[in-house]
Image (cartoon, rainbow, N blue to C red; front, side, top):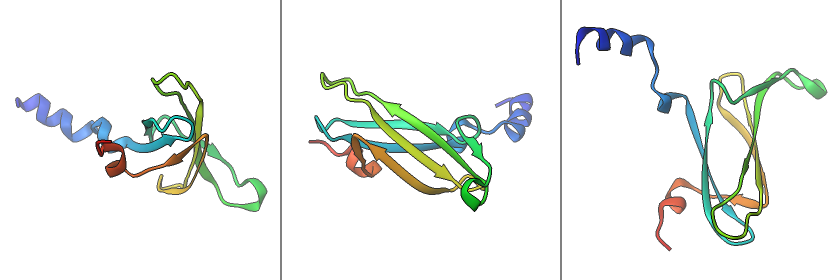
Amino acid sequence: MNLLQKIASLFIRSADDQGFWIYIRCNRCGEKLRARVDLMTDLTVRYGEGGGGDVYFTRKTLIGSNLCFQPIEATLTFDLRRQLIDKQVTGGEFITKEEFEAQE
């Protein structure tokens, strides 16, 4: 790594530092899906609606590659430090990374 690359690495965060992965299994066909949420660009601020505090949220719609083509919608809510505080899914269920990577 040359000197300019070392200097640049001090100021540029890697994409993995800003990512949050979700893993979901389709309710209809059982296909495992994953999606990446970029914590710097994918989040929308929601200002104290309903008397609550300010939060970030995002909505992801996933469609698998099997023949089922059922849209699965995940809604994620983050606090102001971009830490996950709530998650909901329609058309599927959240699974762990280990379940996603497990062979069937």
